[in-house]
Length: 424
Image 1 (spheres, rainbow, N blue to C red):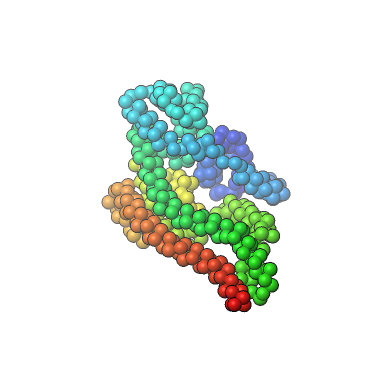
Image 2 (cartoon, rainbow, N blue to C red):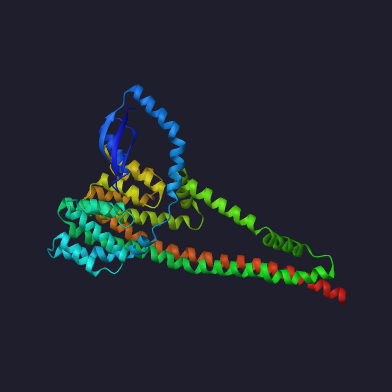
């Protein structure tokens, strides 16, 4: 396969270069564009240059991988995370201002004077300055990816190209609000089980660290043979008090290795595949991903984005790497002339009903409406599944905590009874 050397700009405007395998220069550019890398120069390498470049790349691979892993552990932008809650309101207000005929720069000025979040205000000022210098609104937003993701930027770009930016922003605000409601609903349903787990763990820790040691001193003074459950409890208690640091280091090491592995391509795929196979939560995660896919796909198509471009964008915004692989395969099949529903049916990630409804939508020319119906159906199923998961988890947590606390109580009572009999 031919190899092309390129120079390009990232979505943040940083210069980058490298090599890429592709059959044609166009395919190479498309591959890079799907990674949000925009080519400025590209040339094909001959066989000798290709080998030299690949040899050099192999020598630099380990260092580059290590550097990438280190960069991936950068601290999160907490200010941007806190400001994301303002994006929906900003988007809706901007759509209203543009619909009223106010120019984009003036509309941004109006937003800047009304926004209370300082981080949002700073970002909007930079966006306004970029637009005044001649940049498109989408390009200006793309330089602040911590606040405006790839989906947001691409929908704005489609709205600018179609001359319907206000309508696209209005639709985008509704989409973001719906996604936020779904996340909040799931989070609220899982809050109680999490609180129960934390409180129960706290109670057990308190018993093991403070209550059990005081009672065991009585047993040690009596120097009587202890029952097996009590001996087991004492061994656990001594392990927690004397070697807690070993457990802390082991947990930290496991978390570090897990995070490093799941940041690789194969690790992320393994994690997301495993999520869908979990016995209790797998069904919920799958329905969440499908609902997000259907809603996002419909929103992009209604905004004037072509199906292939919409699928490429979906691959970068869905929260599951396995689903992203399926969508990329669907996009490639469409380029080859296939329809959307056939590869989706063959993927085994989407339920058959989703493929059937998409096929009906393609045949009738109402794909966006059918995708909306899929999203609505799965939103309802997510609510039902969440309630079912919560109803399953709560008694399981109660039973587990009862078993643990019961074991501790039994281990304490048995030797007390034994001492009482000996005293009697």
